[in-house]
Length: 323
View 1 (tube, one colour):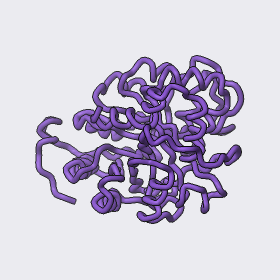
View 2: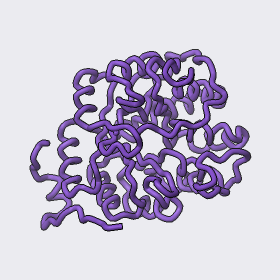
View 3: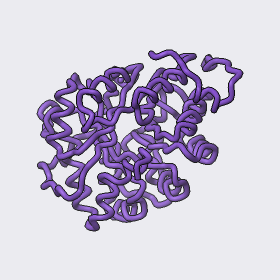
View 4: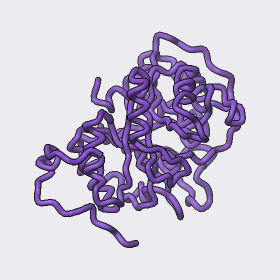
């Protein structure tokens, strides 16, 4: 694969961060929708932040997205753009910023830009000045050890920002090589909060991971000693995004294991939905709302309100640097 350099600069990284630059999305793979549940009873004492939503998901409008946030009892949501459209959704960072200006109390804007472009770092810096709070969803057909990914994570480290990364190994995947390369970033960059998401991230909840060509949604008992279980324990700057079919599948495949996983990592897990439905009831998504389904499951598994509040709210505030 031909690699295009980000661009030469004689300035140091910190000089670059202080410089003035000119001002200037992903349908999840639909996992099996079995075990859909009715909407859970809300506990108003525990606010909820959804760490993973997209405008334009299955054609959803900004107003539809706000309807989803309100209908699911969610206080605020990370809205993640996907500028290249490689995952099936095209959502520009500017669209997210426009929506944020219209709904500032409910939208937490993230940004994303094509990492192959030579001005990607300048663009991310511009979005930073315009009010974005992190990078994501980083989802492009590149290996995780691509030097352009390294430079992007380095910039997030300098900005003291989170970055949500879609990990999907195999042909046509995104950020391939989680087992080989993720820990290197965690050791190298310690201020950035890396938020793991998607199929290969959650497949590594188990020490036994089938080849991606066989399945991206492993089922059955979890073998202890999985990669993400260890990394979440070892690295304070790593967090897990519970969203989408991949997160739900991983949590429900072995509830005995999940009980301990939730107990060990309740300060590292972020509630998220990645849900494309418009009304919180799955009207346009075969009757399933990922948000409501996951809320009900988590309430059934976590009895301690303090730990549940961490997952629903406080961990999101931590990755934003507000806790």
